[in-house]
Image 1: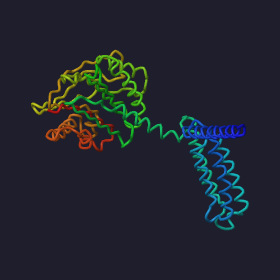
Image 2 (image 1 turned 45 degrees about the vertical axis):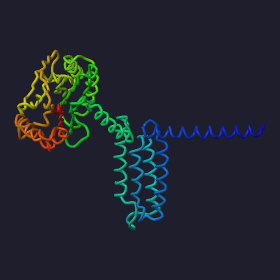
Image 3 (image 1 turned 180 degrees about the vertical axis):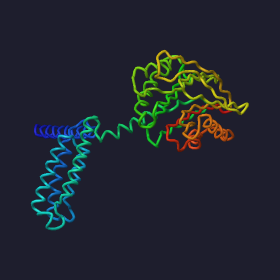
Image 4 (image 1 turned 135 degrees about the horizontal axis):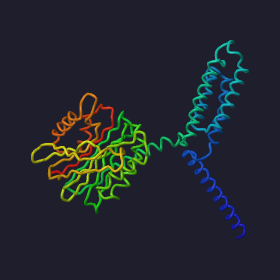
Length: 381
């Protein structure tokens, strides 16, 4: 019995040790790929590659050229910290010296260590060191940088999603950044307030475009999302204006339009901060009406006042909110762009407005080098 207990105890201790080792290895691997762990594992692997490549060069320099040493150098520039990278470069330089001595002078035949080989290896090492120093300064390793950008893009997309509306309402939104990029200076935040009876939507166009405006857009979308629904409708734009003024950005202004829609009655209020007017299609007359509210740009001066314009969406009506990239271009003014947008939207009246937001951007401003956003609300008859 005692022997069996001892065996069981030994087996249990062994299992615990194996489990702890497995957990520690997995944790270190996760930390490494997140950029939080040490780079000793990658450094050891790349350091082993250098003598292996050097041996291959000495055995068959035709198939394993001396310039093959750039492979661990390039990988080290992506994986290692600057201090480890310098040690790797020292090992590569030593390998080049050994290859040069053993193979003989480059004037005695091909497959030798030539001055060009040294220049290529040195240039790759310089670029790798610059990349490593930039990563160390930013604090985001390459292993995590792409994941972070992807995560930010998905968060913006989720935050810009419009909430579900009750039966009898249709909503959709299309956003196309400048230059086909993933980040935009235009963004939307939306929420249902007052127990779900009211839909509040804010469409904002940050100064600049594409990646230049993406960082400010990301910051403002989070701040505006926190303000929306936490303040009465008439207090949102003044609070947003104060927030922009406190940032003290060199290029810190933005335009914004705030829709407050009663989903039971269809009545709405529009608050504007220097934004383009909304467009409403009246089903009875078949005409588009511009709904322009009064208010200055966000982030220009303190104490700005924003006066709303009121309206009502009846069955069959459509309301469109959009940014200037959709209707403004170098070869046409805004009025012409709005006419083109309404003319293209008129073609959708017979089939309905489901799935047309992206089509309108493609038809009206496909090749415009600016951020474009279109938000469409309709009340099918």
